[in-house]
Amino acid sequence: MCKIKTIHTKEITETVARLCIEANYYLGDDVLKAFGKGREEESSLTGKDILTQLLLNAEIAAQDQVPMCQDTGSAVVFLDVGQEVWIEGGNLSDAVNDGVRKGYAEGYLRKSIVGHPLNRVNTGDNTPAVIHTRIVPGDSLKITVSPKGGGSENMSAIKMLKPAEGIEGIKKFVIDTVKSAGPNPCPPIVVGVGIGGTFEKCALLAKEALLRELGHPSPLPDIAALEKELFTDINSLGIGPQGLGGRTTALAVHVELYPCHIASLPVAVNINCHAARHKEAVL
Amino acid sequence: MPQTQIKLTTPLSDETVENLRIGQKVLLNGVLFTGRDAAHKKMVELLDQGKPLPIDIKGQVIYYVGPSPAKPGQIIGSAGPTTSGRMDSYTPKLIALGLKGMIGKGKRSQEVIKAIKQHKSVYFAAVGGAAALISKSIKSCRVVAYPELGPEAIHELYVENFPVIVTNDTLGGDLYEEGLKIYAIK
Image (cartoon, rainbow over all chains, first blue to last red; front, side, top):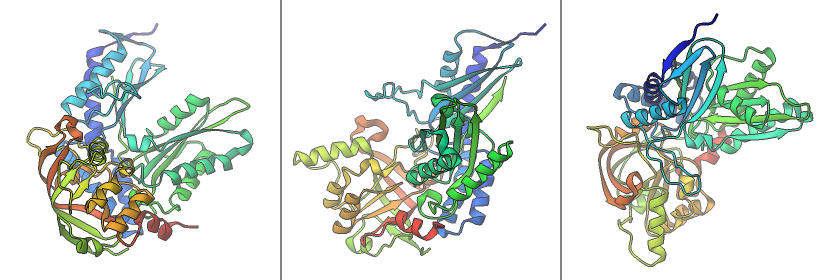
């Protein structure tokens, strides 16, 4: 016998609203730690100075309860819905969007979404969110809100490699993507890499890779080694903080894998600016 | 790169601008005008029709910014720079009219770099994403043109010690290129 847990949509709305605000005001300790380490090791004085400004900026944002960046992002929301959860009170997507609307209004966050990609009229409330729902075992609902800035999202890329191109092809694609992005995604960046799956699965893997806590390598030894190698190569490019030269180009490289078709080797690179924001809650 | 820190007050003269070199840290004081895509488009449309601009940009500095909404009691919301490249197609015409400085983030086009050199102007980088910190240096803010554009309207900001880095100078120097050359490990 399994026990069904009931969660009301009101609670989901309130939680999403709170997470939108918290993600934009309070940068994670893992990112702050990475700034500190970068500043210590950075050989460019300009780069050191920029990292100092970023640490100070995060402190001011948290203290004054204001957004760390004026681009408060698209609201990307991950829902891990336990299969023993019953949602009452209405439509789950509406509950999430109500939360985004509330959080972006009450938190004085910028509304950056246009309702039609060609007509480009702002929806005025930062909805709709981009919602990724996963059904998982258990009787809880985990909500992760990850506000994603436009500048770094624009520098992301996906490529369907030939299996023969192998690990060298993957490394080249990742490095080329970061190199051509240069200063635009607001380095120091977090690089999320998806390898495998299908076209859309691969892009989602890259996005999920950005949610991993910085400083935690992949549990797979060969992938942890690849992450380390990519990290070293990216930080040898010379791009540096804000692209003004230096050695702190990436704060971390995270790689996620998924099985794929015998004919395919998809690779996706999702770049996050230094405002590597996400907050989660479990209901 | 040199780490001298210079205090400047706007409007900027040709002589001031000519003395700036890439990599220098500058604290800007005085008036800055905000403007991004929509305001630039409107200004250049006026120029193409032979009409005057709504603001006199001679000697002035434009900051590419679209702030977050101000909280009650705040002068302005978080106000970090936006990507300058989107303004590149409009910028040379404004530089030719006497615009002496721009603040944003990211590389400029060859046309902008050429106009900076030819007409004596300067491009400063502000730290992208340091928006809460930057807004502390903004002491007043009022709309002076195109109120219909909302957050994209042209605002006149009065700033104190607004931190920027000289990124393109009148000698044709480009810190994005130089920085890469110095710090890339082959």
